[in-house]
Image (cartoon, rainbow, N blue to C red; front, side, top):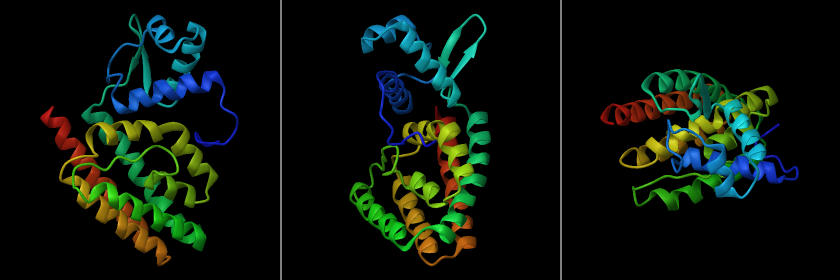
Length: 220
């Protein structure tokens, strides 16, 4: 199931989504300990609801548990980045190739429209923030693969961890303009139904993004 399905959202879901968003955006800092009591007070829910949310956050790779420490937000590390982006490059490259084969003409038109909307955000050259879900370029291409196994593997496991690296380290500065141009080239390959080129360009795009984030991690 997609993490952005249209099924009714429960109060438990809302807390999970709220904490997840705070982790991805860095409001709850990477590496910080999660306190059930503190979070239950902030969100006005029981500790049982918070505990369930933390368990779900662990399942999507945003939280880890350590002996004698408890639940902590994952730390953004060089090794973690390398391993994550090796997987991302392979799977999203495959998604781009399948999208070129499987997306309908309507879906491709919507993808081009999405990119046109993104242009308004990047023309100042300062930032390129994409909300999670259908307005995220990468997520839209993943859906366009029409491969449910691939969609589940990415969206239910590492999607938000990838976003954590992207949002906190990779969506500002000089990389913004070049990333947008790379997106345009990927969409053009998909529009031309050139799956081989779409995969190559996506893999290269993710490699460049990894290099950018890696440089920022080293600076920190």
